[in-house]
Image (cartoon, rainbow, N blue to C red; front, side):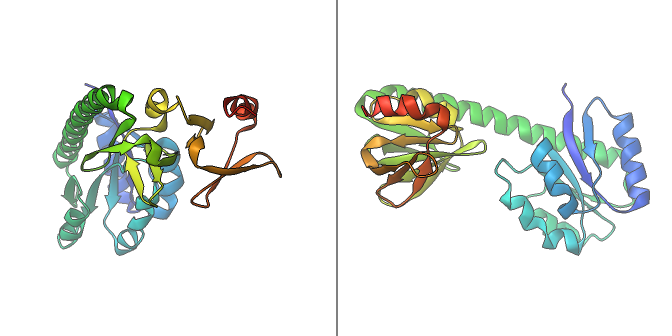
Length: 251
C-alpha cells in the first residue's frame, strides 16, 4: 500500500501537535508535506507540491478563501475539514469534502478519513483509465475520418479536426478552441493528443500550443514570431520550433 501526500491547514497548536503525532505514527499511509496556518499561506505550497489530500481547519476565513483552490490548474486535492463546531459540517459537505472531523481529533477518525480519500482516488483512477481506453478506441476508429475524441468532465465528444483552431495546455488538461467560439476542456493532457493532431495541418508551435495552420490569418515577426488566428487570438512560436515550423508551412 502506498502513502498519500497531504497538506494540513491548521492554526490551533493543540490540533497541530495531535496531527503531527498521528501522521508520524501512520507514516506508512500518509506523508505530510506542510502545516500552513490558512488557505492563503497554503496556495503556493499546494501549487508546487500538488498534494492528494488536504486537511483544513473549518474557519470562516478559510471558507471565504476557498475559491483560491478553484483557481488551481490541476485536479483539486481531496478535502477533509476539521472543527469543534458541528455546524460547519454542512458547509464542508457542500464543497464535496471526503470527510468532516469533529474536534478534539481522534487518531481513529484521522485514519478513516485517509482511507476514504485513498479509496476515492483509486476509484477515480480506475474510471479515468477506462475512459482513456475508450477514447483511444474511438480515436483509432475516427482518426482517418478527420475526427478526434475529446473527453470532457461528463462526456466524450467527437470534434471535426477542421473545426479546431488550436489546443492549449492547461496543466493536466487540454483546452480546445473551436471556430464557432466555444472552448472544450479535455481531461487528457496536450501530450496525449500529439500523435493524433500533429499531422496534416496541425503543428506544435510551443510546449503549450498545438495549432491548426488552416486558421492562421498571419504570422508576425515583431519581438519574436507569433501566429494570429481568425478568432483574434495571437500565440507565440517557441524559438527552437521556428525553423521547423517555417518548413512545415513551406516558407
